[in-house]
Image 1 (cartoon, rainbow, N blue to C red):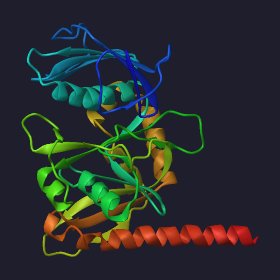
Image 2: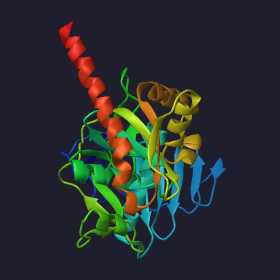
Image 3: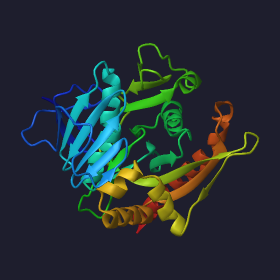
Image 4: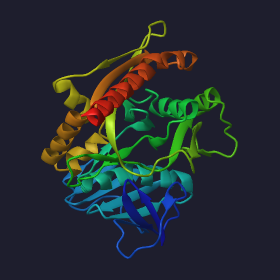
Length: 316
């Protein structure tokens, strides 16, 4: 078995997972991953889609062309790779949808965000597919030197604490070919996200924070027309909860696998603990850097508030 840690959980795996951080072996891992045969259909399924089936505390996730995954009790994943499947594709769905299903079984709150540790705390970015979450986080990391905390997915575990801590996922960035060029990063030697795409993995040995952190801000990325100026505005009231709910990773899994009452409670707690914003900007790399101005100004402004509050406390 190989031992790794991600999302604050220790994994014992029969499958080598180079995307994850290795840790010492243990007799009590949180998750076990084994290579076993998985049937095409889950017996006595109460929820059945072509690629997702649920029967009590067991579910199947099917990634056509890659593998079938059986997730049990929030503790074990069985992997049945299709003949000839690319190993990278098998791992991609394992560390994505299959592990996401397991997090929901454990009543965690996985969020579809990319995040960085700014001078005013952890800022997480979410939005619809193609909104540029990873590209934005990568830009803030490479241009400002801010450590990354997550790319694509991070998770809040059901810990008994007044402060909800955000746990990082695999220490990597997934960037499209044009984003790599924009950041002047060579794609030589990089692994493709899928065999048939021009999206690539950058495994980060430095600049990626593994320790859990409290979130300070959640930013929803929204598109404006190419000739419009970028802007950022706070979200208030019931919309705060709506934006947190909208950031849940694999929300269709959540509805079938998680305790929805507890999930709403987690989302409500998070909405009360963080600042939530809408960040409007053109989704074009040509104006990417100039559109950062309102975001950077808000991050710096919040940092000044923190400094003033700390000075005021020390003077008392």
